[in-house]
Length: 118
Image (cartoon, rainbow, N blue to C red):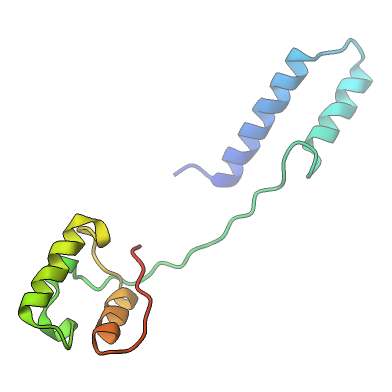
């Protein structure tokens, strides 16, 4: 994977190079001052803001692997319907994270929960 900070700097520098080429002057002092201004945060762009995301633990189960014990309160017929809906885009064939399986179990037990697809 490309370093996101390096990618930001490369894109910014390429844009600055374009500006310098397309709108060049014959005065080096103006060129230097413009380059410093363009590299200043808030003029051409902002510094990148990177949000680290935690690596969630996988449950080892897809929606297709769900069993009645994972979904208390469902009948086998309803569980079959849930799996059918999941196959059409609700969860897909992705392995569920542990917190998703936990919330699914709690919601089927009657607790109010929000389950997101990762």
